Length: 282
Image 1: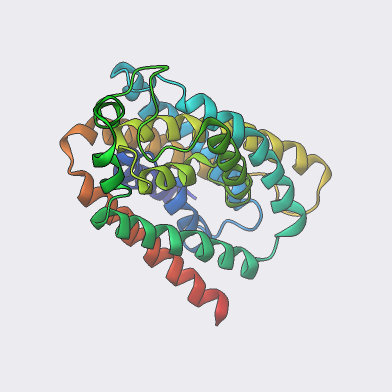
Image 2 (image 1 turned 90 degrees about the horizontal axis):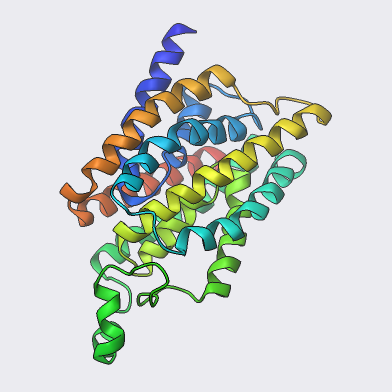
């Protein structure tokens, strides 16, 4: 038991240092560790992942808030869509997707295309020609920092489209145990939005929706059968490591090359997705 807790702290710290700078919760890559290394049963692995987000999230968010990176409407729009979605995803996870084979296929279906998309978009950024062809008065805000209430940069969906996308991602995030923000962050980055703007909003969304999702699983555990409640000690241990790692990752963001981070995340997502696809199909 003791080695598991220390291993959880180390895993949460190392993963969060790498993922926090681009707004991806470490839960995306921690979930396979919970399943394969720590042996957390299904569906308890999902609320355990959400518990990690709740504990780890404030580390990166505190740093981003100090830097003024949480200003603007993007985080509010993401939360408005993902909160109801993650509740629906929790219900679906408990009642419709309890089996490990289906769950592994779901992991592969999420991580494989996400990883490939991130790698492709690293070398071929979204909409470079359109951004250059815009008139001067609309092109400038896409390159500069956008103040609260200012025009949206090139590649950002409309407010209604952003909320709808966040709702769909919230459902998937509730099933997967990552809160939703960790999926919509890479999607927006892949569309061409700057990581410095997306990362704080995505992590704030992940934190809020993880609190809601963890509460939903706690309620469902009172009425459902099986392993629904989280592994509290392991989730807290991983979250403690993620708390420190997330702060360090957010602090390192301005000093790290964006292309290298995107490629690293894309490669990890593709490799983990391929591993789980192979395991599910054997």
